[in-house]
Image 1 (cartoon, rainbow, N blue to C red):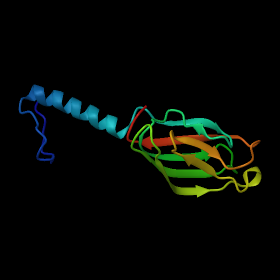
Image 2: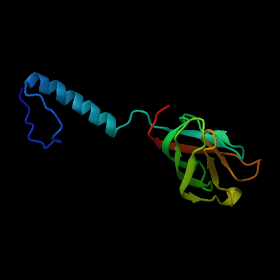
Image 3: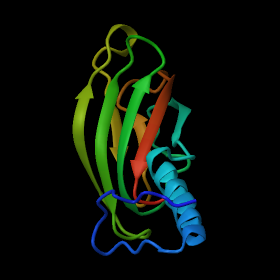
Image 4: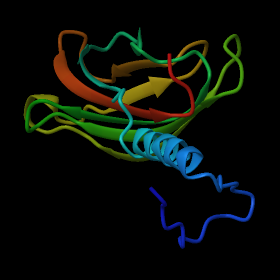
Length: 143
């Protein structure tokens, strides 16, 4: 089987000339491409948030991340931020990308994320207020 490789690749890409090696190379190329496009480990999960800062589960202790948070109910606050930490033992930074406070029971309540020693999340409402949120993390590291 001869594969037509008239596709333009980067000049550093080495494509084997032997048909059997081409088949192996294309299988590996396909596998690498599909893994890159359809990450097998989606980092989103449900978490109950309170006014007490809690470590974000499944979150590495350093790296760069985008976090997106939205409540399971219509009136809950929504939040997205860029998180960066260059060391697991030092403080990091949190840059809010967008945030919308809640309404109804959650009126005036916002999500708060900090990166003091680990990545932690809470809300700034009353201590008796809690609810389930969906958290999605895109990042440079996997735990």
